[in-house]
Image 1 (tube, rainbow, N blue to C red):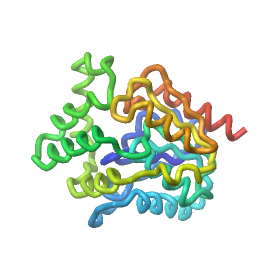
Image 2 (image 1 turned 90 degrees about the vertical axis):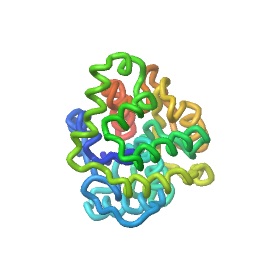
Image 3 (image 1 turned 135 degrees about the vertical axis):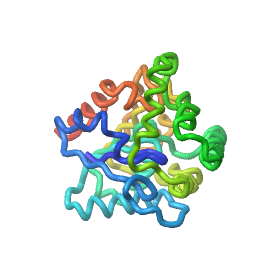
Length: 246
C-alpha cells in the first residue's frame, strides 16, 4: 500500500496509522518533492510531475502495481497517476480529495501562504488551520487541539516556505475533471460528512466521472479524519482494498 501525503506534509503524517495498516499490507510512505527529506528544486511543481515522481518510485522499488491511498493533495497526485500511469496502481482510495480548486479553497490557500510568509510561529499557523481539518469534537477540547498543533513544531523535517509554495502553485491550477473518465482502476472515493475544506460534493463529482469508482461517506470526520477518526477511516480503506483484492 502506497500512501501519498497532502500539501506541505511529509511521510510522518501517516505515523499514527501505519502500524494498523501493516497488519494487512506492506506499507510504503515517502516524501513528495519539496517536503521531508526529498529535494526542494525550484517550483512550481505540477501535479502531473508529482505523479511522475511517484510512478518512478514504485518502478524503482519494483513493487508495482500497488494499492494506493492519496490524501488531499495526495489525492490529486493519485488522480494523475491513475490517468498517466494506470499500470502502477491496482486499486486506489481518494481520501478527502477534490477534482479542482474552488474560490473558497483558493482563498484558504492565499491565507495559509500569507501566514507562512509572515514567519509566524509554526504552532500558531497550525492552530489557525485546525478548524479546516478537524471537527468540533477536537476543537472544543483545547488541550487536545493544542497538542495536535504542537506536532508541527516537533517535525524533524519541516517543510520550507519554498517547498510549500511550489506545491501550492501546482495544486491550485490542477483540474482532473477532463481526464477522470479515463481512470478505470477500481477506486474508493472516501469522504467525511463533516469535511468543510473538501466538501462531500467534490467527492461525489469525482465518483460520478470515474467509471470504476465507489463513493463512501463516513458519518463523522473532517478533512483530517484519518487523524481524528483513525479507526473508522482505516477500516473503510482496508475493507475496500481487501475486498477488491479478493
